[in-house]
Length: 218
Figure: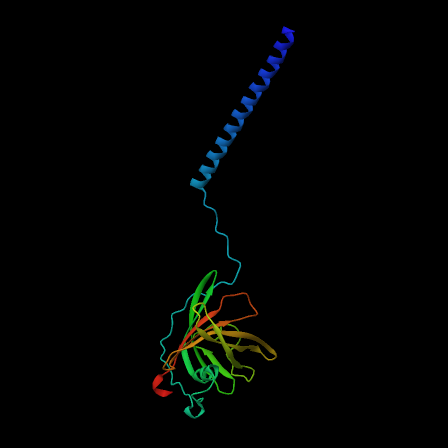
């Protein structure tokens, strides 16, 4: 009986000793791993992961520019009781010049453009910098397929009304895409306009346009 108890205690003691050795071995392994990781952190720099999305072009120096004459036709101005979108659409029909800003996850870039929105629903747009199209995508040729429209108004995050429209981007004969004009805002003297152009066929951020025309030549 005593021998059986001694054997049981001896077996239990061996098991506990083995468990302690296992714990010590695990602790030593963890400590060694921590030292290895610390050593790697001190002497090893992880290479940057290249961004696979759209990459911005190297920023060019911006050319000097001045606002052109607005060239609106006062005879076509809407009456005082016209709808707000009719008044904004008429104010947009002018000769504009200014900056466009593109934002990508990999960076941003700014370029200068010249845009004319015409009363008949067509537009002309040209970049003033090499390597760019006025709406970043497409071509700057003056063709009948280039059209625009102001569809109405929508509310922004501040509860203010902003113009919403659409624009056709021309890439070549038989090749066009329809984008959106968002957040169209006009200054009180009709000399400054700001909007966002969204190329809806791509998963990119809107391009921000900040344009001017000469208020003395409305």
